[in-house]
Image (cartoon, rainbow, N blue to C red; front, side, top):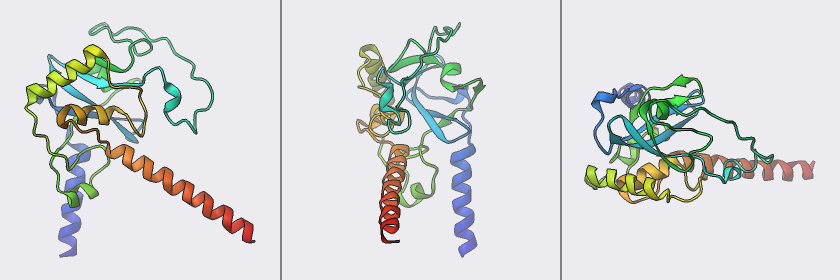
Length: 209
């Protein structure tokens, strides 16, 4: 019985971590993501057709990303525009519309595409990799999802980027459900909270000794 449960969990994990979606299999309004930094995080967006994705990237308020880690000023690097879609990372910020190749680009490597899953049972989602699924219901029609993504892109109106409170996963889930949610952010926030608690505990321990 225990082995059956373990095998089921492993199957779910493998499906979420390794299932690759081919560009030709994408549907309008799909919430897609790719991994970055050796799989430590996932970058999210909404597929809007013709091999284009609308996604949320860092804004001018770069110090909001890991503020405790990056206290020094950010040195902007000049990037060349994409020959296919014209996207230029050092210039285009916030809500951007790029070709799939730019969306999949992680440094010099082009990552595989994955489809974000909705309506996952709470128990199963707890065993899934962060940033791959949610228990939220995606009740909106797919053309409404595309319309919302296009609207936010046209107005570049999703606020300042913040890893915990306003990131690319928040953007994509908002387009699909009208709810800003990020499983990755919840995980990082929980880790940060536990880290602070651990530091307080260590300080108390040192004071006693």
